[in-house]
Length: 437
Image (cartoon, rainbow, N blue to C red; front, side, top):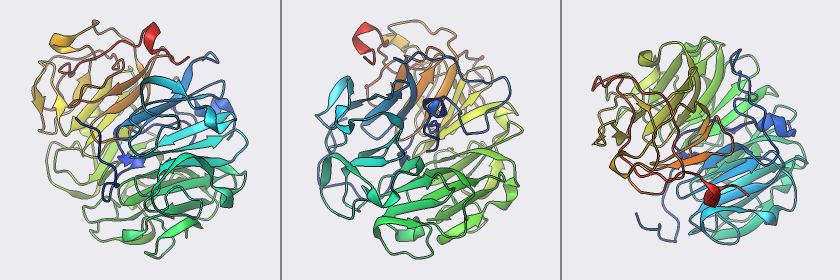
């Protein structure tokens, strides 16, 4: 993801995407300026939605993989926590944030994939580690894991953005070109072939006008300087957005959206785009209602998420769920296993405003602390940066691994679209014992 992260859910992509088969290891049980990483930086943020003043010791962006999450701070340090079953956390897994000192330099951006992590440094270099079964680390090797960061040397020192998915990775260079590597089934690398590549290959047809990239399960999307959106790769559920259900090995424009796209988020097999007028449009797999149109019908072309109106300020897509931030700071989610305000799980695709708290396990009452930044990278959890930048969050509806959920301002329960916040999960306030340094 470019500049600051903005994705909910996903490994969604693992990073920005998720897909393929699991690795050999078993899953655990149930711009180079620091300012470029501030919420919505480089993503066409709306007027009046300026990023806050952030202290050097506070995180400015956060990214979540399937079982781990990372946050980079304004002072250039990187902090990660969670599982280490695929060497995605150098130094070992941790239930609390620990500084990743192995990089030895200042971090400008982080992208956590399904089982791996990539960090863009202030000097423009890119370093990746973790799962490498498909060569997604980008150092020319394939197989096993990389327990320590390795540089993607082919890209040199001109990396300006990164999106790490489960089995492939993409990076935008400062000259506006886009490069991808790893698994290429369905054409997710965008170079006109379906041949895997262990080193970065340039995406064809985009020229030098790419300003943002999102990578997911088997498809990838890029936003260009002219506001158009281009997607490619697996399109079996319509996630490419060109009205077809076939794979696209080269970028195709999502024509329905015109030239006013300011943000894109890729889920497991669905895609969402925020337009400059504040509306949100989604398409692709809709088996759990993740498209947000009140149905469970797959969509091969964008449809508007009308329940959110025209005040959407950020969007993030998980494997089978989606979240959006509105101008008033509230967080709205829909799709798989959503949480209702009465603490019950549901999967009818209804949109909910997330209020935070913890239901019967509540440790603290919901308060009006608007959400500034959300990033999706995992199957069933979201990562959120609140108005107090030192409070990141790791929310997992089904598995009780949480660090301070977002605090919004819910509305009355309508039981359909929209409905109020979910509080049926446990939460731990990010207090002194959970601070990032």
